[in-house]
Length: 114
Image (cartoon, rainbow, N blue to C red; front, side, top):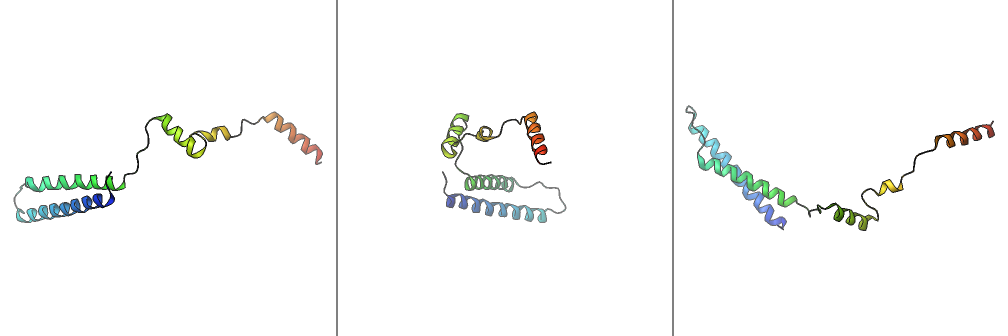
């Protein structure tokens, strides 16, 4: 993988190229104020290349270790790290409440506290 120094140098070089292409486009617009000239091809190519390199440098600088795609591999890693799978909280939750039993318990409690 790229080190942060390499990706930082790609970002800085592409930023300088982008600044230069913007300045070139600005200068071209000043020269051809009255005419409807399109941007020169070299300025357009420089802009596209600099934006592409800037995107690549940012992605390489901020990329982390890729996660496995296979569900069983990912789930197995979680089980080894945390001791439970991705849905371990479902195994630890309470079951459904029995409302009739709770009502009977409440009625007994209410009678004993009167």
